Length: 170
Image (cartoon, rainbow, N blue to C red):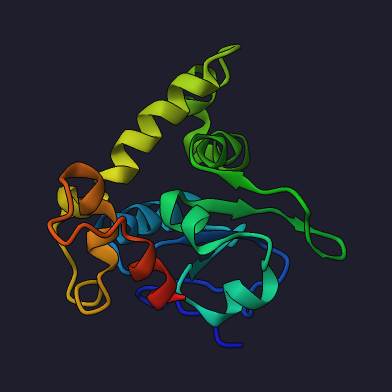
């Protein structure tokens, strides 16, 4: 049950009372954003774990691989372990804007009434292109995880819809 993290970031085993940030550990763009979150935190309110870790499958079986690949998730800590609440995508950023003092400037625009669908739409556009934005990582190429996202942007020449690649990864 060893959580996989990037660059020795705090993990849920080290800080069991922290909120868990689940991110794509094979994505350079995601790794850069996680480093920023760690810098914004500085009080170990957050711990970080890659969605590719066994820890995620064991602790959060309700989150599917497809959900985790589509957006970052925050699992708040509770007195009895982890909360049943799941914040994904823009809702996760909104949650963090309340939780981390260095993100309080983002609080006002993120909490404009009825704005969450707009923020989520913008988040989804970036998330779909994250491998392209930061460039492919070496670790995502062999199993085709980069292709999972690139196939949305261009037709797949093999005629497959990507579901076989997803099953292979699971």
